[in-house]
Length: 72
Length: 175
Image (cartoon, rainbow over all chains, first blue to last red; front, top):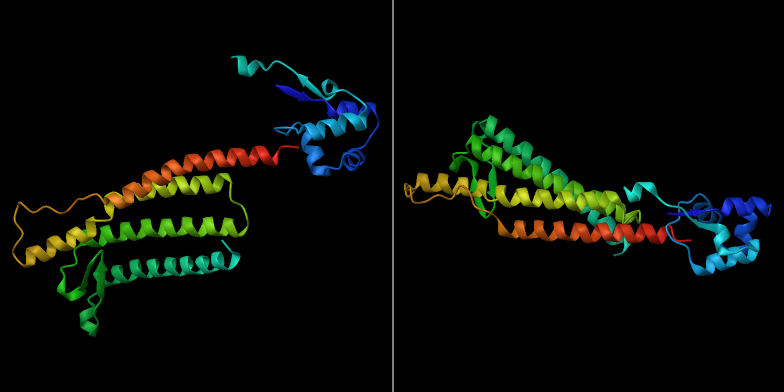
């Protein structure tokens, strides 16, 4: 499964959810969905905007971890 | 479909529910009380047959079958009312609507078996009165294929609707 580390990156850059949402031009609720890991998909445009705003790579935000429940 | 049409349908279905409920009450009252004592009579319409109550030997079997059919129709009307209310609220691809569509298909399947029985029981009564009923005539059970096809179609449609819910959810959670 894919884990979203947006909260970690935001903490590193000391940026609030509202500020980031305003900067990348998406709603607070949509960014909150992404931050809490409830999102089912992410657009390249959104990922591009987040990476630009946080000055990071997509790999810093998205991380693949092995899901044990799916293997069994 | 416009909001006004949905509102009108909502009212019509609500009136249908009241009529269906009154139908059950009036038939039950007719069965348990002798209305002819008060100079009253009830015109009963079962399927394509329309008879006056005093001309028909209104048996308990007919009453039970008519009530079962009326209750099934009531269920369908309640489902239709709920779906229209959800449409008015612009809640289309939701789990509740999927369950209603699936349950409607089950009810239609049951109705395909039960819907012709009251009419056939009345036909049997009339044929018996006319002394033309023989052992060769048996019309107590017959399947209404119209309802059966509608049930199968709706059951298949419910799976398409479920896929629609999945796509809508995915779209909602795409950031």
